[in-house]
Image (cartoon, rainbow, N blue to C red; front, side, top):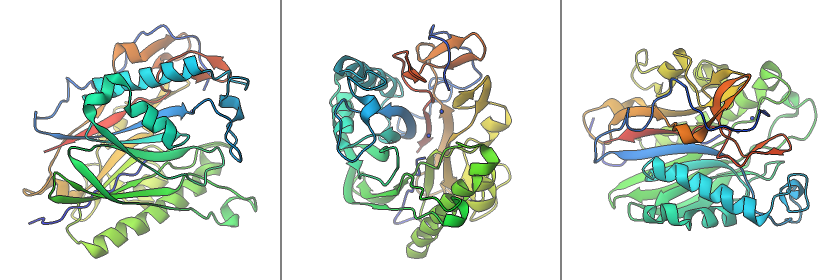
Length: 351
């Protein structure tokens, strides 16, 4: 298939208190060195950065707990450490050219992040819009300005039917869209999403995620209608695993080994089948953070899929007495641990 114009959709989507961190790692996930692509690969990643808030009390936003006098005692010192911790991870990932993030408060925290000395060589630009989320957290995209030129940014507010919210008003992260040009030649359409949480239980909360997945599928269909050769990437924290309804039945994303023409391929389905994951919930690894791609990433022309990685280093982990090796997080309930994030980042390499 000859691809003249390519579109990439990146969908980004965010959880439990543990004992104090001890920075001990032991998990079956791959590291960058184990699954690193070719030197000329385009690395595309996603990271749930766990509540990246500034220290200011912003009017009309429920961010009081992340202030110096709030419940979390979120001081400038803690904020700066959080920026340093996240930057260390991004640098160790070899600074993906395109990096979707979720659980960020505003554009300010993103600009502070990309100014960090550890990742200044990534020359990151920031794409962001305030979402309608009830917690005040958003999705965003960091991109290497030497490679990606943004031409349009917009977001789509999700309006949940009262039938699936039990009559209550419910808001979540918007579908976030970025359009730009990669390496001066290739048009990319990037969609960043963060699916609703499992609050209330997996089954009780599932209709919210299937609703968002259906809305996302409409966006995918619109891209394909405009360009039948569109190369699509859906990425993020889905709060569902690779075999849950929102992923397999609604999006129709399945394993590379079973996908047929015009079906979406879940790059992390095989890892999930091996009980690997990006989030440790009470000792069980959950593959909540995924990257899904269109089947034409396996064609002979255009960007080609190389590999998928759950990124983990020993210094990103701690050994919980009950749950084993767990991502070293910033907070566990009200307890401050000063770690990185409660999720591991994921990435794929394209060539």
